[in-house]
Image (tube, rainbow, N blue to C red; front, top):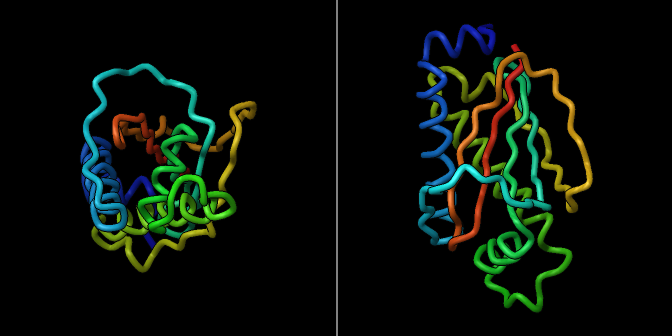
Length: 161
């Protein structure tokens, strides 16, 4: 069984994985939300009080997360479930968790030899911005910044070898 470091070495550079992560995200948003994501033009990290996370275990161990503003989370839920914004409530965490799960699954399937060698955890969704995460990742996170309907979206992957 290959380690994350071996997979990264044989299937491309960190930049290649970042490109695959962006492609996977764009595909999920196009297919599930009929939305074209735009490139973010700023590095500013605005408040993003909604975080959805999926753990990866097996040949690749780590956490993939999708972070956004609450307004963006509501809009994603509306588009995914076909409900008006005033009807979005308990469905939002499920919708955001499923979007993160699909991005993680699509990403891992784009890396040769990883599809069956990596399992995904059930998603976890956190609302609120007053929290700190600690990771045992041994490399800086891969991160992409995009715009969903003009609102910032950050997708990151923390990898532990």
